[in-house]
Length: 232
Image 1 (spheres, rainbow, N blue to C red):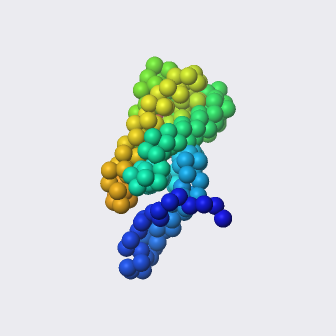
Image 2 (cartoon, rainbow, N blue to C red):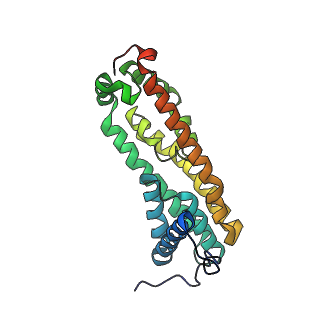
Image 3 (cartoon, rainbow, N blue to C red):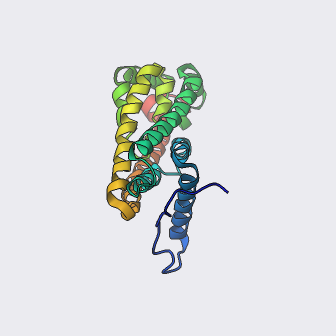
């Protein structure tokens, strides 16, 4: 049995007071799993959880990093160690999606758009224009995208597709990641046992971004032929 960090996490004192159902039970189960991972594997757990968050977003950084910051406030982990592990894990996950984008590439995406442009909602010409725009403003786009819930995990894909050089991608991704990870860690450290309020504040924002993206996608699918004159 793996050793646990000194001092148990008082994660959900209300759990024993009343039964939990539905979404509340799922939230407690997720937090319990994250707590166990951090207790048993320390900084490696923070690193791996943030890596997974960037590849599989349903494991949310807005729960992972505040909880790890709370652990630092209790003296169970180092605040600097938590921040560095979370930042490294998040940046590693961004590199995975960047690699997917580089593998896909602009030419392959153009060929796909020529055959299935309606479902991609882009014509080959629009892909060229987007690539040119990203070449001019890609750094700022990646920097901002890395701190937007619902976007931060996937912004690396267009960077890779556009062929953004690795070094600038890493620099701008790191800057955005440092801001995001630092804010979440500091929030957990400062809020203490109320660290879960961070996730409850950020989650609606992320959901709103995803809903807006879905609505925009459906609109572009519906109007594709009229916009571009291309055949889907």
